[in-house]
Length: 165
Image (cartoon, rainbow, N blue to C red; front, side, top):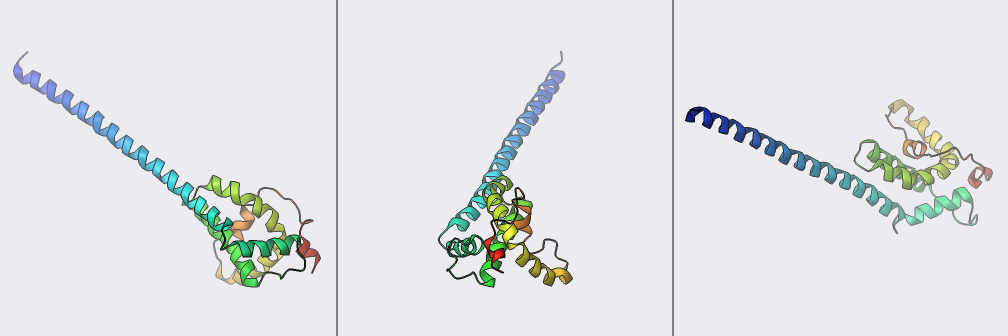
């Protein structure tokens, strides 16, 4: 076999090995990037959990809870802006999950039970606000997050706020 043919065979094999090695390195980098994105989505979802359960949001959650379940009927009802902040929080969380910026499983697992029990009690108030939005033709109306995170229809029998009207 002439030296020229041998060098071409060697060059071909070196090229094939380099291509395989380059492809493998690219695959490893892509795999690491996907893992990092998953971790970042989980972290983003967990930041929402932390905020929802944190000291800053607790007073609103407490007022909403007392309002809908009448656990302390003598306590002050939440203001319209507190109800709006509570509902809007769920809208932002759901938007984050829908856009795949947050881990949708974490969002559903953590916020789904809250939405399930709060949606029937806040539905009337949300629908009144939606009537004002109709002309804007928004893609996700006010309360969309709370409504779409509901895990099951539990009815409204637990909604003491509806009985007070």
